[in-house]
Image 1 (cartoon, rainbow, N blue to C red):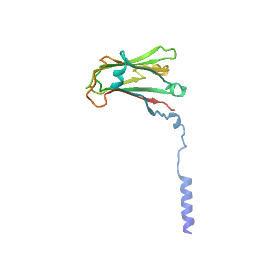
Image 2: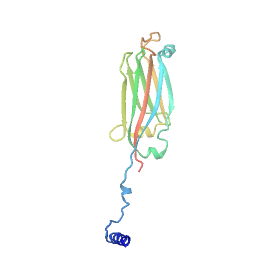
Image 3: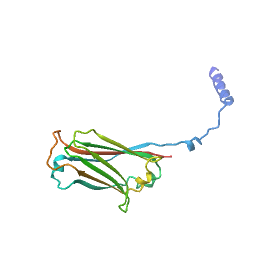
Image 4: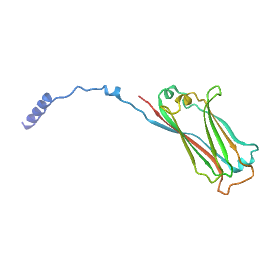
Length: 179
């Protein structure tokens, strides 16, 4: 008998209870914008190698850059940045140029770095793209990155620091609209 009374109370509660109609349109208002981060390149050149190279340029290379090749990514990227870190523990003053090239080899943008001989502090530069910063079209249209490094010092001196080298690191961080 008690079980029937409890069941009757629960049934009456369900019949008399109020509920709102379910609203699934909230999905349309949902915005998903993850931040994606990746390394672009890491270059390290020992001072002993720089000393063996005749002429000023001790490194020059073009890298294929297909980061924005996929329309899915290129059309959804909102903003981002590329971070460069340059370290020089050699006895040489150096210049590094990074150029962003389109499919025809035309320069879309460039970054220039100059560092004195060691001891120097780690040089960090963050270059922002999108919004009021540099145009994202620079990266969307880049098909190659050209990196060149020049020794402004001599080819005989040697740093007293352990493992003297020029190190260039870069990474990218972009916010992408998924929905």
